[in-house]
Length: 212
Image 1 (tube, helix red, strand yellow):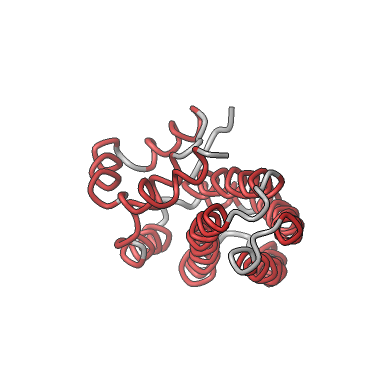
Image 2 (cartoon, helix red, strand yellow):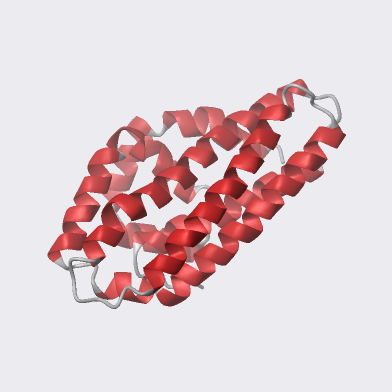
């Protein structure tokens, strides 16, 4: 059981599940299936956006907010460099996934699988580093005024897609992830966001994993 101190590690858990799902789906890709390739590409576009948004928000909002406190942030320079490596791996994986609908073969799926697995390694190492060295600091300062301001900014920036993001965070989550999500967002808020604004995820993305 994971004890989630902030929303950050709940998102990390969803990243790990998502990468594992893609690796599994590409391992079992049905040769010649354009339908499955299109389905995986739609799901990948969603996942790619979530990865980009998460790390962009760290750089734009949360890390600058922490710099307004007295926290020891020497680790941020290392994490910032890891973001560049992660973006490079993400770009390679996205190019490989975009090739799949153009040539929906097991050979192309294998190339995509290897690229996604590499991203999983790069991203996984980064997430583990952040959880070990920065997450305790973020948790300790989560109620500091600059961090509260940063959270409001992120919610505003992500408002239009928040329902789909919450549906993604819930999809395949274990009991500790759900408990952490409910601690960060009151259940009525989760319900309203997902029922009203989470239809795209339920309609277009979730079925991808129901068939894998």
